[in-house]
Length: 391
Image (cartoon, rainbow, N blue to C red; front, side, top):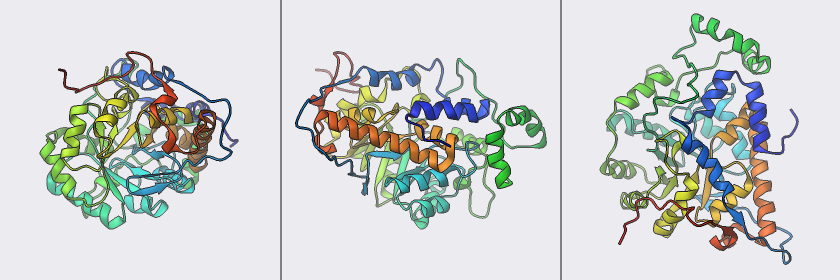
């Protein structure tokens, strides 16, 4: 497949290649989609203060985050990629390794952690608070044995029961009846179908990293049901989980300053300002709006990352100028994966890298560490200072 020059083009190709129900599952969002839209639109409200002369011929895009050196400040956020591409997270991990960055693997992913770590040694294992403490501890032990370099605890996923544009039908298992139901979609998207024909396997809707020892992998909905039935964690639970892991520990889902401080008190080494890509409580502000206050409050004690709405390199630069150490991407690399497998993910990372580099050039910066708030035009009323004490 030919090279694409933007994440938007990757999305167009993904939409053309994927069956409608699979593509709709990637779009996701909740309720009216207000937060989903704001994650993207908020970046458009920010401008730049470029320079005319004194530019540097070479720029350094590398950084150190979550205990690892990376070639660019863009990390792979953990997502479930069932039915997008046969190679799934292994292809994503290989692409991230090829471009010198780190991989986040979801508990609900389609490939075992052992295979993903083999493809990219800089892999962080993401966990949900699902089941008992013993269940969670067993998953951590498996991640440690596999060679995971860190843990991501995701707390920004709540119960989203509806979407105004409708939710796709996703079967629990691909039974003969479900295959018949899905056949028209598959036959009208032959390139996607042929990817699976070549592997002689159907899309796997299992989640192997949630399997108990000696047991088969549960289905996605089986694991989802267990998560729904598990009482939500307290801050004491977060501190307990942190104590079980002696390496980098990222808490994903912080959107308020007061909770950022609670996360620091619980001992996390990094937080991700995230609203689960607009799949949480609809009406939650865009993450880039919440970032500056959180970075100012706790950025001197923990690393602050941003997740949500990144579609171009200039978005990454805006986030770093407002206090993020790095960003995580989700849908952007999924479009690339759907469009062209590993090569498509590499293409997306190249698009972002090129955009970061050209933005640094225009701003007259030699490295990421030189960025500051003065490089970005922030309109009055832009920021969402949630959880900030008044008076």
